[in-house]
Image 1 (cartoon, rainbow, N blue to C red):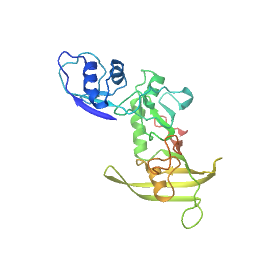
Image 2 (cartoon, rainbow, N blue to C red):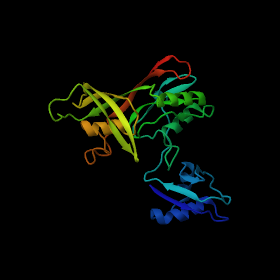
Image 3 (cartoon, helix red, strand yellow):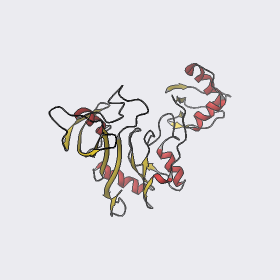
Image 4 (spheres, helix red, strand yellow):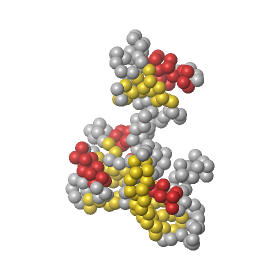
Length: 274
């Protein structure tokens, strides 16, 4: 991804300015279609907000543009991925390889965009929590602010029980055969912030390929917690290119999925199992 800032020029359309400033960065001429696509996909910012007007901009703050390494494709939600829904919430199965929310170079290729299109403008939604891009699994979306705030509080106060399914290569750990249950509690450092992390792992058998399958209960929600704990104490997850560099190619899907939630409904108070 390439990133640069530039000032507007009086009387010049923004699409022309984009083509001029990007050409030396990307090493080739930039077409009108490419600049229009950058604007449409949300790659251009002004005053920290996405800017989409291709015409002559009014005087003001500089622009920022993010040129993605790969083409951006708009994400559309398959209705079959909506696992549960009522008038307050919905729970959606995020595919692996899709961001939960917008990235600096686009806001149209993420799950949030697809869910918003699925529901329509009557429900200005936000994801209540996130999964890594490489992780598949269930994500809550709130249809109104009261439900969103209540769910945020429940996740923050650990009132939502999460269950993951993990897959690892076959292995024999030092000291003997794999145990049926592992309990890990330590600290994890993320961007200079050190936090306590706790995970329980139960061995659940093998899959048809002979890989180990695990049920994972994270008691805290630290960034990459499950992936880091497996890498630190057992073996990196299947397909985990971040913690097993060089072992897996880009075609290997990460062996991690969020498969279940158990909590009280944040609005009705009823028990909710998804």
